[in-house]
Image 1 (cartoon, rainbow, N blue to C red):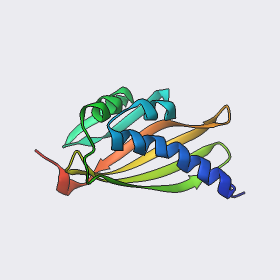
Image 2 (image 1 turned 120 degrees about the vertical axis):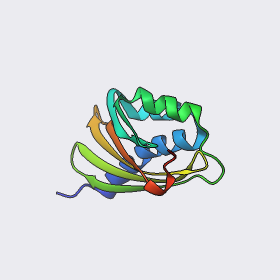
Image 3 (image 1 turned 120 degrees about the horizontal axis):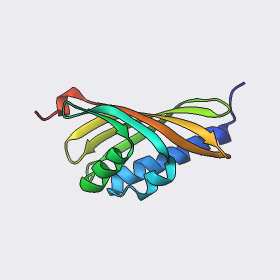
Length: 127
């Protein structure tokens, strides 16, 4: 059964915490979204990042998104307790474009992110 529009909106609002943290360079909003056990996987400038979501927090807190930063949230799927969100980012830190996939679970009635995997667009990789 398809989830209601309100549930899609709740998932989008949860993902907005991620975007707000990235845009403002402040991980406090994302910390409301991610569980303590959340994991991160992706390549940043060709180097594999994996493990605790703490690495994402460090990245966000150390790099300002910049004036030209843009983001788009696409709610890909919503099931009863599971959601998949794609976030497109352009111009993070003034140079990097990302595609992020967030895996969310509804825990105690609240959408929380348990995993983040991302791709850095190859034309924005610095070696």
